[in-house]
Image 1 (tube, helix red, strand yellow):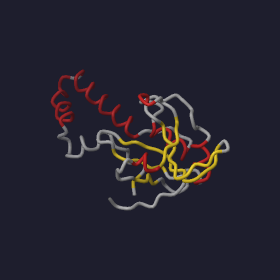
Image 2 (image 1 turned 45 degrees about the vertical axis):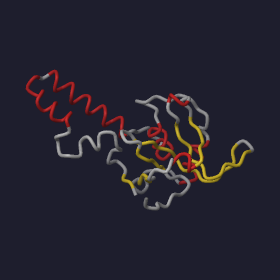
Image 3 (image 1 turned 60 degrees about the vertical axis):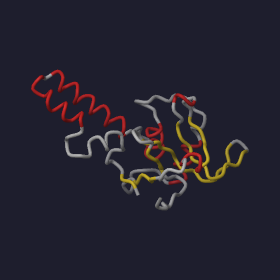
Image 4 (image 1 turned 90 degrees about the vertical axis):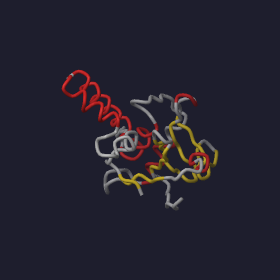
Length: 168
C-alpha cells in the first residue's frame, strides 16, 4: 500500500468492492468536553444506525488503501471550516442511500453541495437500461452496456466516484 499524506479537512475514501466509503479526516479535536484523536467523521449506513459518527482513522480504513479526493482550487472551504462542518453534524441522523449518504456528507463538508458520483452513475445506468428496454431498437445496446462491453472500464467504474474530483 502506498502512503498518502492525509491532513485534517481532507475528504478521504476507500473501496469496498462495489462502492466506496467516504469520510472527512478531522485529526485531533475537542467536542463537548471530550478530546478526540486521529478521527474520521463519516455517515454510517442504515444498517449501523444511519447517523454521522466519529471513528478512529484505523477503524475507518480497515487496512484498505485510502484515497484523498482532490478538489479544484477555490472550490471548497478551508480545512478548519471543513472539520468544523463535520464535527457540528456529529450524531445527526437521516442516512439515505440515494440522497444523503457518506459521499454526499463528505462532499457537503467540503463544498456545501451534496454530491455523490456513485449515485449519479447508478442513476445514469438505470436510465440507460430502462431506455433500452422501452425502445426495442436499443435492447442490444442495453444488453451490451449491462454486460460491460462499452470500453472495458464500464463495470469497474460503475460504482466509483465521478471525475468531478480526482484521487491522489
